[in-house]
Image 1 (cartoon, rainbow, N blue to C red):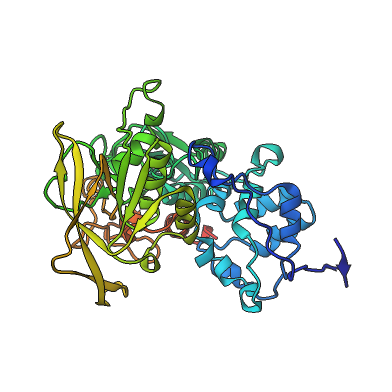
Image 2: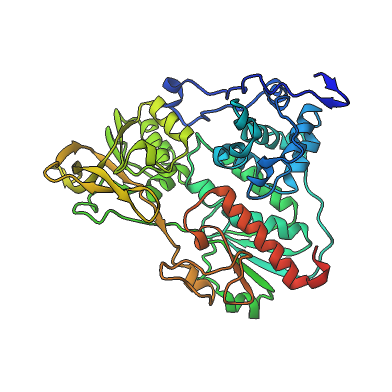
Length: 473
């Protein structure tokens, strides 16, 4: 790669190196990864497109502040261990974030190449490339000496993991309490294997164990323990609440309790965490529908629809009350879903599920919508079209219309909640209880993995400053 005045010359006019995606007709029939990731040659070619900006806007777009230009430069220099170490200074989950973060709205969305009419640097692919080299190059961050302070982290999702890792590096004795039998939170139970392999999540969590973080599984805080026990009996100095927002919202229409109608949380958890796709090899069953309809327009709806295809559905319809333009899902996820055969039905809303002779759901009654004035979210409000009702056959229906706060938040610690049941916390994660911090979806509502991680890092810094005073950097 050529040098000019001692610096690498960026080939920024070259096209972006494409992702190595498995053909849609192949991948839609299995749970193998959709994208096999960059090769070394791909990564070197893409890294050489970077302008190495003096004022890198990409870093400002990253919620955890990764030094993106440095790790890209280290890729160019083939210093892969150094590049991974640079990322891990800010993010302990590079393989996860490289796969599931909405880079198009964050780091890549801020890339200066967007202003030149060229495609931005594939920062997510490069981060994933380095993250996936963990076992071959290693890059465990150095921890400070033990400081004698204990912190309990409740929840092992993205926010809890980020907080635990940051605190461990500062010398804290950290234990993570997780309600499920394995770690990762939504990374494990919510995101399908074809987007995020569970082995990747496990490897990232094992990296935290290398830092000394301990994990207690099958531990439902609020049932087994509460804040008083943590502080008075178990000797913890602080608690970080990262229990998420996993309580599903429902359509509240007739027939929603019929067999064959699932909320996305149950549907995806059965498949992702409990391996229902391999029944009867594993004990958890799932109904393999032939005509599946999924309600919603976010990433969870895309995951449910694409999972249904892989479970053998002949047709999968994604029903949404607005248009594709208003869908909150990542553009790439919608693109992949349509490539694989998911049909998008815009401007419809469900009215009622109806059963067949066997008692299972057999069809759904819908009505058409049109877009009116913008609502409080800024999107145009869907308005029903009178007399537009019609029926759609389905033997499985999945609702993916959002989630609410985890109700265990109020049982785990004495903190103030807002009217929707979310924990009230400031920008540093401080709550009404001086020993309790909180962050991630239980504070903001459902958001992205990387935003939850950013909250965890911010809270860790605040906990360290509060418990260590001037000794915290």
